[in-house]
Length: 245
Image (cartoon, rainbow, N blue to C red; front, top):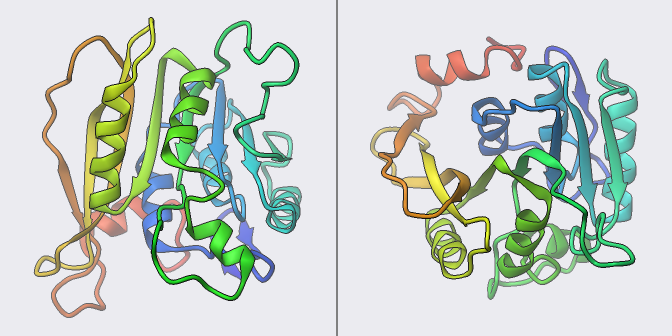
């Protein structure tokens, strides 16, 4: 169990537990708009963080794993944001894609994603862990197809990945655009455990654009060099959520 200031995450039945980098994504991403989507919600963490920051938004949280979706529903129901968040137990590949295969128009102003990213790594004996961590059920090509289908032309997509996988996603997104434009990065936050550690996560924001967008990545360091004390920047970002700040 992980207690935040305004909600609690029960996570005993889900493979993906609350982690610091996901909390940074939930606190850093711009969740403006009336309709938000969380792809692969797991415990419901990102959806609930978005609901806290944007009380006017309606948020759909999609989760493939039945048990995880059930726990996410319980976390949402026990929170102050139950009227804002709906959890759907379905693959994103077929979500809102029944019948004709196309929506009349894209639905969402903002999409949040903390996707699986392992490809050839050693497998766990736990199938739910493999599903949460490995790309078998949600390869990047399928993820891009879903986001292009569901994101409004003026919308933004926020993704958390390790640096190599983030670079691979950016390249893949640039290869196949649509008539309305190509999903291109316009902001990035690079995350370090402390200043002498390498960057271990990229938080990248995409939007539709006809040409590449100039941007310089920002950086967030979680701890001081002692590895225990949180930096002032990290404390400021997570202060609305963490009980310890």
